[in-house]
Image (cartoon, rainbow, N blue to C red; front, side, top):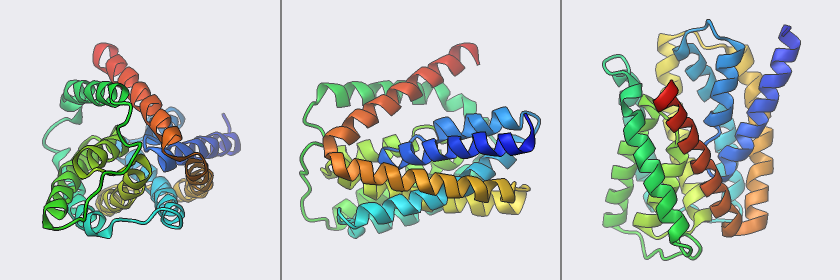
Length: 256
């Protein structure tokens, strides 16, 4: 494949990733394999760093799009984002000491449990059960942000799905509120990962910026679609993305 067509294919992948990410997260399922297929001999850290640069603008745009229609619960989003920033930095550093693949079976089991729980609880996330967010909610958000931030920096698959599920289950949000809060936290984890990778590997900046524009376009379309169709649509997309994540992790665990 010549360079021009490679950029077209990666741009299309970034658009699709941006769309999926804007709704429920999981865009890395599309964007990362596309990068690895296009650059099979390039160091994984270079491609992961390039992926984060391509993703962060779309994720930030989705958060802005949502915030125009869905209020961001800053009392939990901000503490969670700060904790995630720190967690993601140390998660990225931890890769040097422990292979991320050791987590694969554990994450597979957790995703199956999340999917089953969401499928069986038809009312989960359909209606907001949020109370007034005080110190307890902020503490829960810090724990969620720190743990999932570390996970995103260390391994990554399913970060958005875990954030959305935990915000719904532990803080009583509906799918739309959980999604916009997850976007704020995810911007923070992406920023930490970019800062780490930029100081340690050579990011493919030209490609990353081209993909970022495509990811941004997909994110705008995805967030507007989610807002138009509401929590029911986001719930269906959530289950679909989690199911694909389960299938991929199961394949990688058995045959990878």
